[in-house]
Length: 143
Image (cartoon, rainbow, N blue to C red):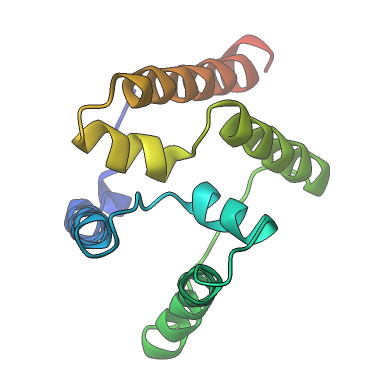
């Protein structure tokens, strides 16, 4: 394995990780809730009147933030090495996994691990292991 040094961006990754950690910590301190996207979206499926406002505001922020970045910094060159069918199947599998695992990468991997949750450790190991195995199979074993 080699590192693509010209495209290696440790400072932006560190900054993003710090912002995510800070947002997660503030969210649990202020609201007493875990900052898990699947839980926030899932709460809108069976809404309670006091929860709808903050959940919609959070999701709106997730949609507006990339648009603000686009306006302030400019477009980002994205490359997806898969067809639409693969992307749709992958999205469905991720959705199934978050329901089956009672949470997503942000809920378990960021918030759960920081709270030393054994359930989140098992979930994070499971979805990371499944991701590693999938990449190995698709890029090396079946290629």
